[in-house]
Amino acid sequence: MGETVIVTGARAPVAHDIARSLRAYGCEVHFADCAHAWVARALRPEFPVHRLPPPRTAFGEFRRELLRLLDKTSATRIIPTCEEVFWLAEAAKRDGFENAVFAPPPETLRQLHSKAEFVQLAQEAGLLVPETQVLDRPISATEFAAPEELVFKPEYSRFATHTLIGPTAKQVLKIQPDEDCRWVAQQRIEGDELCSWSAVHGGKVTAFAAYRPRWRSGNSAAFQLESVESPALYDASTKIAAATGLSGHLSFDAICDHSGETYLIECNPRAVSGLHLFDGDASMASAILGERACDAPPLGTLRHMGPAMALIGVPMAIKNGQLKQLRSGWRASRDVIDREGNPLVTLACLADAAGFTLLALRNSLSPAAATTSDIEWNGGPIG
Image (cartoon, rainbow, N blue to C red; front, side):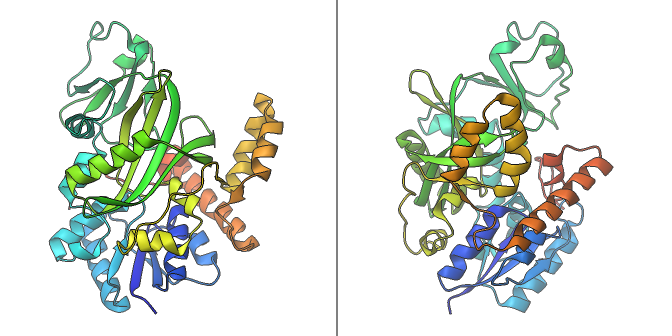
């Protein structure tokens, strides 16, 4: 038996594939989250699932319970997957277990998460980024002559929450940036969206996957993706990894414009759906643990999230007259939610979705925002 590893963010499908990979590699795996994470509890063979306090509202209690969990399990590694990474990195820094966490220090996480600071970092690394202006004061009616050529978004955000793409002047005036809640205005790049996920150790990429979102609802996360070749995104991953010297997840959103140039739009220093393309194979665990690099997934690999394909994809395809395309893509793809053929996993996925939907309704949030409301970090002081 290998080492004992805690995978946090158990609510997320990416956490489940990381756990599958680690188990295949011989590790003892424990899940942890401050949500119920019914899917994680339904996986078979079973994984222990531990409940933690929500770090965004109870950071002190989160730290104490995390230390207790480390002591109880004798875990030597913690692999964050979602936005709890920011709180976890800060807790590790204060409590002296930074070397156990698959994440860079808080100051590096801030630089990568910031829509403003990341652009500067990428420029210094010689990478293409959109022209970006930081907004830290109220916007005047005449400040932007052509807002339809821009994209506006909060400095710290996720899932395109609050993002305005090519807005009207009236919409722009509703933005209320200030020094404590900055926004950015970016040049709008037209083209094909590409994404990537990398595992990085000591500034070196050990796993890499570039992919194209195939099916998605609006600008939210994709529920079907296809592996593609992108030398530009691999180059960006190696350069940002080297520039920061980080160990952890490194994920990018990018646009390949009509001339073939690839622009980095933003960075997510956490796990994203691209790692599903590795199918929970033991080689991914080896790369995440920093023991051996693994090969990229074969080009054209298709993976999907079954419940979302059925509940979101089918109505969308019917509305847009794309049912034939959805059906053919679905048949050529594999489900990442229920890999073992366990119906309880799909039911648990629906239970998790229902729980976040109720939370959204109670708190006047979008369903996407509800999934991170207890763990997200928006640039403010911690603890």
